[in-house]
Image (cartoon, rainbow, N blue to C red; front, side, top):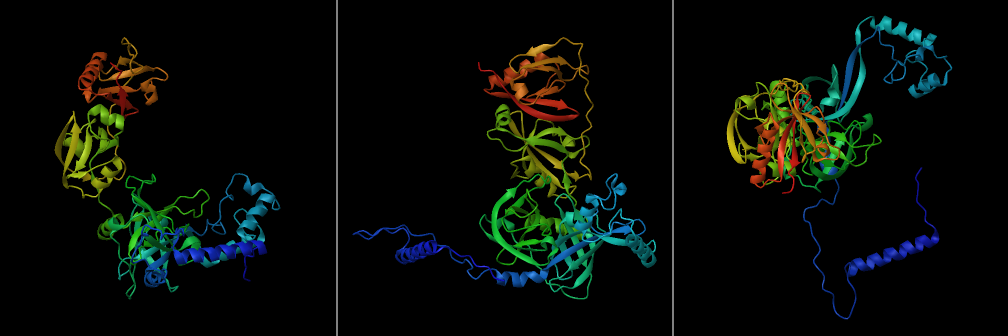
Length: 525
């Protein structure tokens, strides 16, 4: 049944009049004002080469390369009586004791769409369990785990998808554009970039797509997303590139392309194409307060995917270089305190024990500004640059230290499976030494029992130190990269900063075996 939108007669008259006016304006040129003299108009912006015929040609070519990915996990048939994929609620304490006609049980029964569910020990459930036992015995069987999307990148059956689509699965099935189903094996995964590679073994040549050079992708470019939203099968949506270089807090290598094409659950792992039919990104996340599409989706750039996928196919894993530092951003205050002209780079808060950086002489307080002459703007960019090198690669690291630029050579190690923590001996706050007050900063400190650093015993409310998060119990390890063990050491470092015309000093704080830096402003005069 078709629906039509009807307007009241007066409204329809006004609309027709408006349409006629627009037609006339279009004929004489929008914005023209008729006077006795012909108007002088600026030339309109003209863009050549825009496709006016839609996306059908692109979709027709790329659709055979896009697949749906079904993931299943193995379960023990003897212990699995969930009766379906919706098992939440049935394992709640006390659920078994509810009467069969209890509203909560009725709700889950109706939600499931049948009358057999976990916790219901009625005759039908018992008959089904007996039937399943006769059919399968105690053999393992599978249950649905997730559904997503993917795409072929080679004619011999390699498929790219998201790690979170295949995570936890034991069996994988891909559904092609023509509806045929093929079993696939997992080649490798990379949780840090949320990428995975599957392989289909079949005596045929698959249609596949290539990665684009995403360095040429611009905000405003058209993109076409093809995937399997909500398990519906091949679905196409279109939009534009909304932004580049997005950091959404998903991991240390965040560098997402943001698009506004409709991307929903099940689109994960699917490609976003340019108008040439090349993959500019892999759809992996959405911003959605409601769980549905709101026009903000994030895709892994093709350059990242190409590199990671190549490693997974060749090695089954991704081998990344490891520098072995803990880092934080350089703020304007920190840059001012150390004499750096602009707030850029990555401030080293700790060179990890037995790490390549420490062996090369990099230490806390250094600011890494470049690697192999490639400028580093932020900690996130440093992580990406270092991760792009293979272990055992030699790199030249540019540092800002003590007001001057230095260069050191580092042989990168292998990124540990877990984030390595520095082996720092805990420092015990001391309360027996005489306390002194650093009035300008709002701090009261005392020498640490270990003889290294100053323990903060009190922080004045509303002081510069309190505003920057310094707390009682913190240990001041250094000021402007100079180790401090007494108030006199602090006074000396502050005086040197003032003589150099600095407006702040960089203070290294140790808390719970972790370091961070804060810039404390110097008092006027």
